Amino acid sequence: MIGFSESLERKKATGLIPVIPDIKIRSPKEGDLFRGRSPVDAARLMERIGAPAISVVTESRNFGGSMRLLEDVVSGVSVPVLRKDFIQVEDDLRTTRDSGAAAILLICACLPEQRMRRLYDAAIRLSLEPLVEVHTCEEMELARRLGAKLIGINNRDILALEKDDGSVSRTQALAASAPRDALLISESGIETPEQVEAAIRAGAGAVLVGTAIWKVKSPGEFYRSLCGEKG
Image 1 (tube, rainbow, N blue to C red):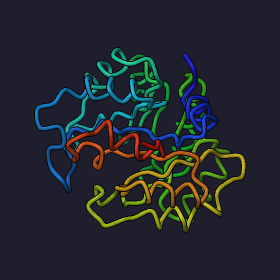
Image 2: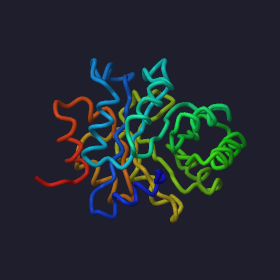
Image 3: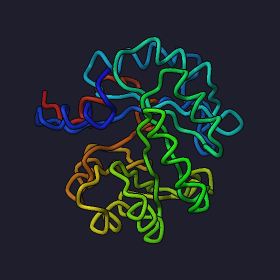
Image 4: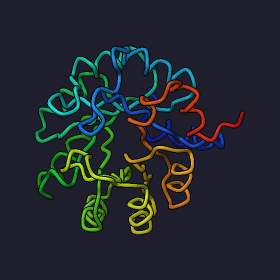
């Protein structure tokens, strides 16, 4: 299967913005996002209309996810899938690999540097692409020290369970200090095509959007607008 970053780069080469739909069952701020809809059907829809990759939140207590959800989405689509969770130990990486996911989120705010490095190196050994998530200048420096090639800038504070009012301004503030050879993904707090374009202008190569897609009546049409499709 094509790699996670490579799939994003291929989408970008078509002239459209790589937008990663985030399958998140529940938002601590917005509540139930799927309201009885099938998340696997939603993932399939996103793939059909051009999503280069899918993100799945597996954390259960606050976001309503599960490993079963991840496995079902991986089985239901052919594009690379990212697992998002509060990864802490190498067993989490092995479970992720065994699910068939292509990439794993590693959050700087949740891990001391030594453990982050161990998990980063272990993910690579397991052929999982690590997405290193940052929210501050200090965390961006940690990503640089790791040699991260895929960096997510979370516009919201994950330690506040994304209940804060973060915006694309966080990406605008941090992107310039990112390693030049890293692919940047602007995550969270993005609700409009204009905000997507602002993130791209700031230096992001892709964006990850969840809540905004599932809140609208026509997720497919809205997704296309985020990618920059006309008409």
